Each structure stands twice: as structure tokens, then as C-alpha cells.
Length: 229
Length: 229
Image (cartoon, rainbow over all chains, first blue to last red; front, side, top):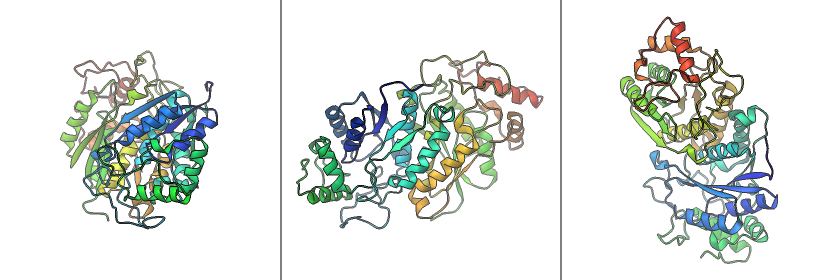
């Protein structure tokens, strides 16, 4: 049932990590189908960045799913809770921070799985990172492995052995500096991206949230200034 | 972090199977939080049935998530594909039928997981059934077990050992006749429910689709006439 060319579904935020994952899939010769989410996020302006990145890198199609996780809240990204800006350091907080969105990557990957199954596609890319990151549980390799196993039991395509769904995480063990370096090598224009959790209305990063700090650290370690600033 | 009374999140369709699951959770003394989906389903009138069932059985709250799986299609329930009506027999088709919606239960359970985590709740109920059913892969015990494992790796609450998420499937090994019998025992009014995949605009079941046939079989084996007819 697989059709050529090889296809990939890419979860595409507007941030730092999605673009090189996309570029990596492209470099493997896959036709990329990008999926983004308007999920009630405080920083929904990232969707403009995701459209810029999708256009710049070239995708077969780019779908945006409308799901409103403010229905549940429980996060500084989806409820009326301030985004923390007082933290410093590499792996910024020891506890999982309030910017964690309950089950978000599980929801995102579930939609990606639905999309992939309808395309007869078995390769799903997500730009999670478990090194310079905020400690989110759904960015770790053991979580991704468990999702992949579940995905192959969940689907008609998996059960009928039409293919094996693989969740690809090309950045999971890279530092932010390595991600940026690899992205530049693959032609990613980081000026198009937006990582901030709490940007201004016109899309300027706050420079102080976890996501901004991790991004700055990555550029700094490459001896570069973030072109999005 | 668990608060009393004990809470449960119940996936509540308008159909035959959700109501007794709900009643079962209730009989265990949990405060029930019901979750339904407007997912672009052909039979979205089932949401009226889910509201009737929720009201009749009593829930603490009933949320409906708006997610449109017509974005991906690939099913007779979410795309312009006819619902099959020519099949007969117990486990009606040997192959997974076209009414299978790619990754639907994975998406539903992912939202339930998000909801549960924000409630500090660890018990999720879903009315899947792997005996008199249409052969959907995401109704089988091995799938549910894999989802449960993944859920505890996905979430802050799981990783921080605040509780263990359990996916409860009280009906999974029951026949439709047993489900109906158990539901009646627990006080379910099946006149409020709607199982049909292709109902008329005023909510009358077609009587011919898989879901209608399995339901009729269940009532017939109890020597009953379906009160929703």
C-alpha cells in the first residue's frame, strides 16, 4: 500500500527545533507533509513563523489543526498563568515548569498519526530535544518509544502490517548549539523562526522565558547572534 | 496531590457502550467528568444523545472538544465515503471496515489524558469493546495497555509519581448482549442513546450499518426491542 515518493509527516512549530527536523527529512528524500496546531497557545503568532518556515523549506502541503487546549488549561501557555521569566541556567529548572502543557505532544503525535495513516505514510518527525530543554516529560526518548509502540497497535495500517510507524526525533540528543549549527548547515534561516512563549503582539521575543534563554544560549555557544532578534 | 472525592474522566459518546462505563465509574464512587468530541463525524447528532446521557446519569461537568478530523478524512465517518450497509453476521467484517477513523481513540484518549492531568485525576474510562465489535484496532486490550504505559511516561503527573494513570475498559470483554444487560442493571436508559453511524437528520438510526446491527443483536439476545427505535 506504500506509494512513492516516500512521504513524511513533520510536526512543525514556528520554533528552533522543527525547522532542522524538517530539513533532515527533506534531505532523506521524503515528500514532507507539515502539521501545525492552533491549540489556544499564548504564542499563536508562532503559526506565522511556521508558515514562513514551511514556505522557505518547501513542503507538499501544510495543514493547521484547530484544537483548543484552553478547554483544559493547566499551563502558562494555555491558561491565565504568567510565563516564568526569573529562571537562569542551562537545564533551567529542576522541576517540570508551568509552561508544560498536559499531554500536548501526545495530542500532537496522535493527530500526526491520523494524518500519516490517511497518507499511507509511516515516518513521523518531531523536533523534541532532551538535552538543552525545559524538562518536559513528553520530550524524552522513553516516551517517544512508548508512543511508537502504541501507534503500531492503534492503527489499521499497523495491525495489518502495511508498514511500521516510526517516530523520528533527529534532535533528541543534541544540544541547542548543535541543533542550530546543524540547522544552518542544512540551510535553515533562523530569522524566520520564533521560539518565545510570550512574544509581543507583533511577534518580538520577550528574551526572558525558558525558551528564549535556551535559544540565546545555543546561538551564543556558536558565537552567533540570533537573527530573529 | 490527589484530592477527594475520587475523580474519573469518562469518554462519553452518545452510543451504547459509553453509558454503562459511566454508570460503572459512578458505582465506584468517583465524581465523573465527561468528555465528548465534535470531530466532524457524520453522526454528530450523537452529541445530543451524549448530553442526554450525561444529564440522566449525573456528571460533575461535561466538556465537548471541537476537533475536526475531516482535516485528514480517510473514513466513512469523516469523509465523503458511504457508510457500508450490506454486511451481516456477528463480527461483521473480517477486515477493518471503512468506518474505522484513523487514530481516533488515540486522539480521544490523549485529550482525556490532558483533561485528567489538569484535574489531578488518574482514572480514565472508555467504553471500547473487543468482542461484538467492528474489528477496530484501537478497541483491543493490547492497544489500551500500550496507551496506558505511554500515558505514564508522557505526563508530569506520571513522571513525578503523583499517581498512576489507568485506562479502564469495563466492557472490553463483554458481548453486546452482556453490555446491554449490565447497563440496564445499572439504570442506563437506552432510549436516550444513539449508536447509528448514519442517522437521519432528526436522529433516527438507519438500522443497517455495523453499529445498528451489533446493537440490534445485543437487544435481541436479551429478548428485548431497542427502546431507541
